[in-house]
Amino acid sequence: GKLSQTNWAIEDISVYKNLLKGEIPAEVSELPELRVLDLRNNLIHGTVPTEFGKMTQLINLNLDENKLTGAIPPTIGNMANVRYFRMCCNSLNGTIPSTISGMKKVWIFSLFNNILTGTV
Image 1 (cartoon, rainbow, N blue to C red):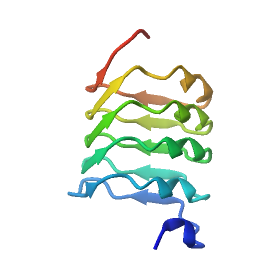
Image 2: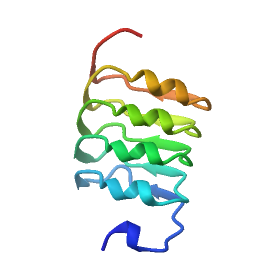
Image 3: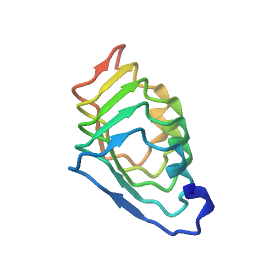
């Protein structure tokens, strides 16, 4: 079933350094208690879901070293409590959204080794 049909109080999803394939389900953004989403070092492909902007409670997002493509959605600026924002070593393209100014608590913002363009 879908994650939204559960009453789970999941705070941490850490499944890094596996061989997970597929796309990130947008439904993960519907977990109201989620503070950590660590999917680094897998084989995850597709785009970063625009629904990630709903995860205002998230503190740590790590999508490093996957096979993600496409643009970084502007909705990420809604992630007001994120402190660790990592998406390096993918194939993300386009520009860094100006909406990142909404990330007032960010300590680490890492996007190196992608295909990003534009000005800083």
